[in-house]
Image 1 (cartoon, protein in one colour):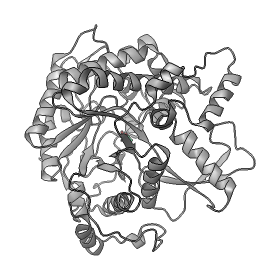
Image 2 (image 1 turned 60 degrees about the vertical axis):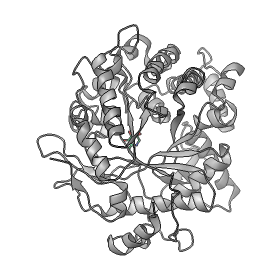
Image 3 (image 1 turned 90 degrees about the vertical axis):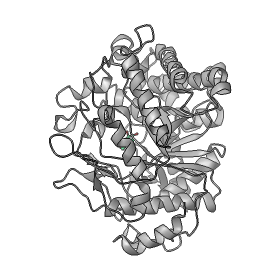
Image 4 (image 1 turned 120 degrees about the vertical axis):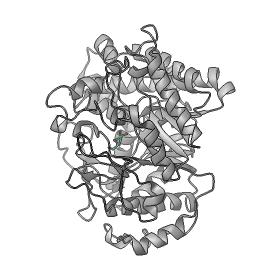
Length: 499
Ligand code: NOJ
């Protein structure tokens, strides 16, 4: 794709100048003319719970997000994914949206309970669920769109939560293995790109520490969130090895994991204490999952110190370390690095910790000059994208990087935002930084995936945050629409979904 020409046109026509988009540094932020490789993958992304709806249709089992959203007070406005974008019924229209955008790839996730209603193979396979995903995959391929499938995007079977306590229980490693083996066997003849887990940090911290996400557990001791991460790493590695030994030879696909990395910029890059604080943030907040897989099978040094503190604080509890065998299994268990990146922060040292939390010993801020999205944590910092990509290259062994998410939200306003200036600016500037990472820093970025093709159920904030390139109006209003990276880059505005 010839990006520079398009971007130059956009720069002059899309009511958006990089100069207006946060603090502008003429060297750092200068537009880079150049092209992405022909083989570069352009994609958009969704997840099952956020778009499918049909939460209890055709024998689908209940997931923890079904239960959570049906519990009063858990999701803004009482929103649920019961209908969402109705992609269970409208998947063909979704595919047409992609086709209209010229997309050749699509990242989506499987709903575990649509396939295995109680989460286990022994409990029975739901053929309707298998048929649904076969239909989606076949429809994509018939339209020349390659599927990229996430096996776990946060919607654990409720039955496994009830029976085992979910990810805090090591039994989940085998149960997840059985589920993904079934998925590889059923869909791997056509699916060649797999992601085991989407952003496990959120799964564990929001699900088992703060309780903002399903299953809503608030264990402030941090034991549950630690066990959750520990088991997910083991489950990921086991899944990768199973693919590697049992399916790779016949299916010839790739299996990775998606981790979420913000960029932490030192408050004063010339002050060693601030540089150390930013590095601490990158280790503790960002590398719990990436370091074991891409470096040495174990947590990064500063995270290990936190584990020691957890052991001291909970002497009666079992706070496991990885055995040598587990480390060997986890190290190298990925064919590429899946990256979700949205935003950055500024990190400085603190003389006096603000509390006892893992990040209370550093100072985390955002520049007042950075533009903020409707979502409270999302600030536009395009150059953070390039820095995080370079960090991955230097820290995690120069892997192939698939950007699996990047995107911008509007608020839930009436009428919905259709003149998509902020989103266009966000994509334009972030994608240009990806190009710089490839051309200047030689990072092996292979894919760019925008979140999301259409507005959808944004977890605990319901439908109040709209990340879509197509406007999806939930409820009685007309259904929404279509707009893709490529068309956004050409300065088009958001459009309504197919009628
Ligand atoms: C992270 C998650 O993977 C996705 O589900 C979510 O909607 C977006 N980022 C935006 O918050």
